[in-house]
Image 1: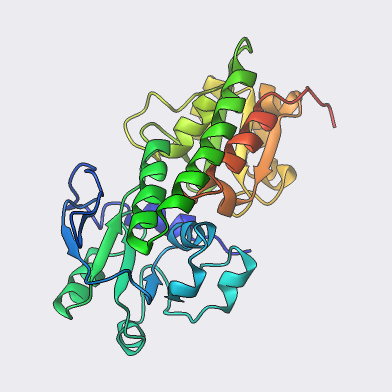
Image 2: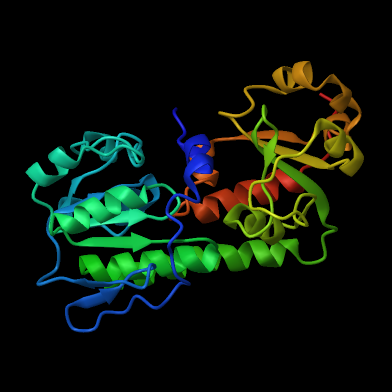
Length: 300
């Protein structure tokens, strides 16, 4: 399973001329995207191209896969997404292929796609909608907006109710539990971790954890191995593309054997595609984090 998350860390600022999130409600045939731009559509789009995996997952969850003309090489969930025509990667989509497919709408994301590709598509006269889900509420907004764009408002409302119900269930479970300190690794070398103002930081909090990097300055800061030792996390989480096994991690940082997370058996590796895609599997990610943070100690 290939994850694009390390690539996204490199390009978060490349789509930087974004504006604060605004409402995406339709005004006749006009929609306001998360750049604050007006996107005009003559009719409900029947040939949509998705340029990010989370967008593809939302559209499938909304039941509008027949309107999905193409996706990126990284769009691998659900299984049916693999059978859709491909238009390249997030950072290097094939614009000639996109033009050939004659889309009536291309949907992009600020945290995965390039500003230059957005501008080129606009110059070609292709309607482009940009989504920017930076937190759980932003994910709800993306689902609501893509539902409106694709004519699936009712399904979007139903999906949101399902996801929000799961969130409420987890919040009830967290009540009364003692928060555990958590470190979430997304890269082993350099040592990149989940910091503040990211939806993963929010998920850690919702799952009853306390992010030990939550007081730093950037969403994905670099820590030193010594800082990890000093902060002594009780739970250590990592994406499987960053850390292949506990032993592989300890071979790089042998002094971490003394961390409470290691001595108590609370080191957990997670499918990156579940926890790093701000889409409909976000509550599956939240449930996983809850189970891992509050797991019983193990000496295995």
